[in-house]
Length: 377
Ligand code: PEP
Ligand code: MG
Image (cartoon, rainbow, N blue to C red; front, side):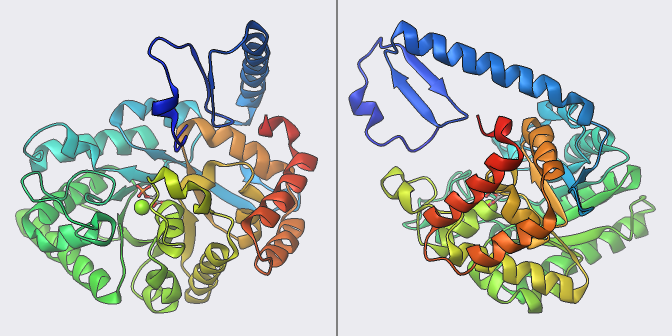
């Protein structure tokens, strides 16, 4: 539950809180009746979740035969056991920034390799997409000892930091490449805005490959390289970027923030944070078409991928892979399996031309309600 405006002023110390993360609710001092109602709701949700477990080994395929790969987002290595447990097809976004949290100094190449190897083992036979450090913005300070920036989201963040700190970048890329000897590994760069950034990043990967080869260290020379599409400029130039990479992964969390100029962590403008806004959908659609034309696959790894209300639009867009919170995998699989891709494409066509996110939400809710009402509770 985020962006509950004024909650810290409204709360008295010692109050009882009922928090419903599914509905995004905080209820202060709930009545016994409300508590009982939520307990019943929780019990129903648990039984729905338990009922989904037979889907673990099944594909995410629509009623008319369109298949989406369904992977998991991982933020901490303690989540790794969930990959197999929830039947995810590997890791579609491994947020490596957590390594920064552990220590004042970044882990060495050997230490990073060990961490990455654990993710590869947990995902086998499916791939792991390692996203290189995305520090700055709302994550970690770009540099612990650096002064604060006036606009961190528009500042030194993601691939910009890696390219400016080649020793940090090299250490990470070498560690990822070493892990690629043990299983299927892909590398993805965050916050890409230009073709030049991709070329410079790929040059680093090539240089690391040459070094490792010279040292006789094993790695996969065919490792796929991708770009996150989360800056509107990258989405608009997706046809140019698509020539430089093997895949795209749309980072909707940032794409929404940058498209609508709405800080993703500022509760005062939370109402404008609209993933279903037609402007956002148009950028996503443009990115998918550019990917298709260039013959590369396109995934989505932002929060919308794990929201069953959004699934009809993602199916309609023709996304190849969704990467969602590990505990959302079975819910989203169940949603995909209840949908008809043709109907989703019709819904998307209308959504691209509507005037408001609210109208799109209503359209999605109607279709989702008709196909999988139990997943919306
Ligand atoms: C995104 O921006 O959608 C994304 C997946 O990256 P993060 O949330 O880590 O910025
Ligand atoms: Mg992002």
